[in-house]
Length: 143
Image 1 (cartoon, rainbow, N blue to C red):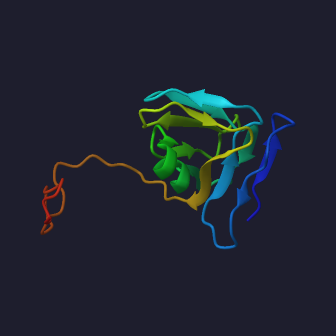
Image 2 (cartoon, rainbow, N blue to C red):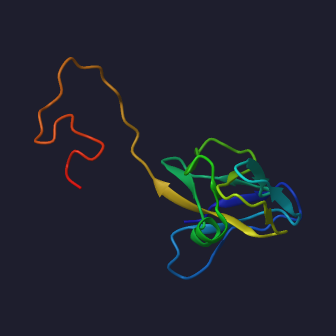
């Protein structure tokens, strides 16, 4: 599958895959430092826009090393890029740590996975089918 990407800033880096089998492509900060104070969220500019095909969406996930080693992860946990969005892809990066963190110029800040989805038609109903689990949730199935 080919995804058309437009550089909105000539300094931007196109997404890249770290390995042949990577599910997510790395998204890069523009070539400028960004400081994120403890427990704050900053919009990180990637300088790119993408044309996600109809029937697909782009999901923005944390980079595991950035999240576990420096406490930096998307504020909304998973960002969603709809197929009709043509604006700049930005990452709302949150600093979960008690220390200020600097995002280096052109640093990999998140990963983008292109995934298919099913569009549902929601229909109101007075009754739902029964299951063994029923309405049990939040740990109701065991430890």
